[in-house]
Amino acid sequence: MISQEIIHLLKDTFQLDWQGIHGVSHWARVRLNGLLIAQHNRANKRVVELFAFFHDSKRMADFNDPDHGERAAEFIATLPLALLHINQQERALLMLACADHSKGFTQGDVTIRTCWDADRLDLGRGGQRPNTEKLCTSIAKEAVFFEQAYQRATYQYRRLAKMTPTALGVQTWKATHE
Ligand SMILES: [Fe+2]
Image 1 (spheres, rainbow, N blue to C red):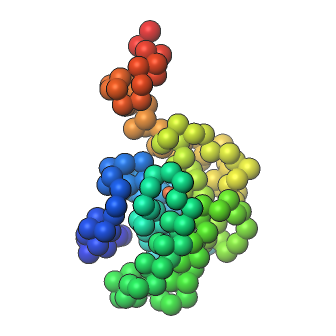
Image 2 (spheres, rainbow, N blue to C red; image 1 turned 180 degrees about the vertical axis):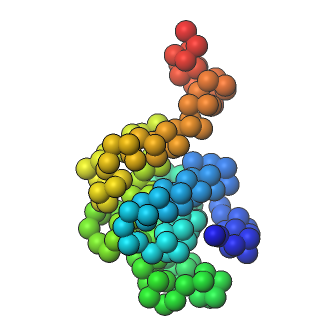
Image 3 (cartoon, rainbow, N blue to C red; image 1 turned 90 degrees about the vertical axis):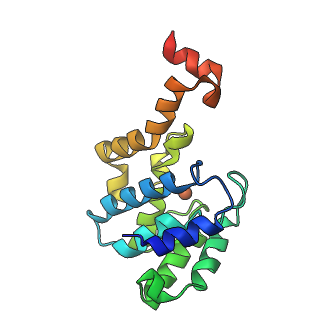
């Protein structure tokens, strides 16, 4: 679990919309994706769930912010291990997963690859279907697993498209109502 202390720390320092495309609902889905992938491999579940909540926590922009992963890693380096409930080796893995998560890499430690796929499987929240060639765990590429993650990612988007014409544009709204 992610402690209230960590949630408060992240919320107090997050610079973007807490409910936005890189905010807490994305982090919660990444956590679920990661823990589900970890049931099929030997990824470190504690590192996976911390990655979910930290990897985008130091974004300064929703788009075009290539250094946000490095900033997340630097932030993690300043935090006490007792707060994170991990050891030094796990912190090193977590920092590497965060630092490189948006660089398109597909090779590495199983925990790190699990973190990256957990994040990539949630691309649908912005209307973008993930490219399976850019996924790096076998379970994430599996059709049923992939589709279930895509449905979770797009749920909010599909709901918004039906309910609020101004949120996604009249064209989208019309398409769902005509
Ligand atoms: Fe993310």
